[in-house]
Length: 159
Image 1 (tube, rainbow, N blue to C red):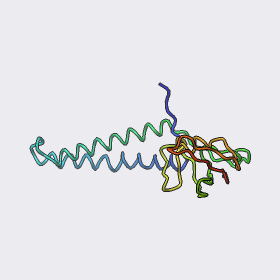
Image 2 (image 1 turned 45 degrees about the vertical axis):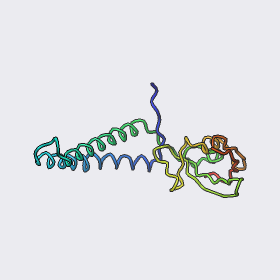
Image 3 (image 1 turned 90 degrees about the horizontal axis):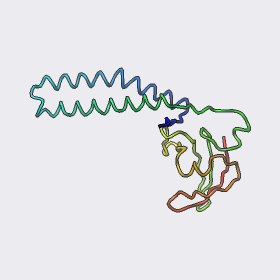
Image 4 (image 1 turned 180 degrees about the vertical axis):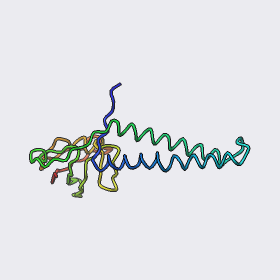
């Protein structure tokens, strides 16, 4: 099975490294303390604190494995000042588009799925909008066909 690449910016990669370090060096030891304190209460079969600590441990360990897998498969999005690279939309681009149905203008940074946060203006390279506008240029009008109701957008700017 081919390995899935996770596209991340350098900032996103650094954040994942910090999260992993925190989970391994701070959260995991705290969970161990929680488990020890819960065990000290006696009968484990009816010990809600012990059950909660085990659940917390499972969540932490799952997140550690997830972050490790992402970092192992991460491909850092290179930022380029190359003018020809900025003429078409790619992962890492900052794109301003106009929704032609309501003339609303929005600016997005195209990032990998692990960094996507629409509230911060970061949209995934796997979203229908990005899939439609990848490799397009300023001035192009593109139909977002995979949306519930297809609509057209015009590419205003690429950085």
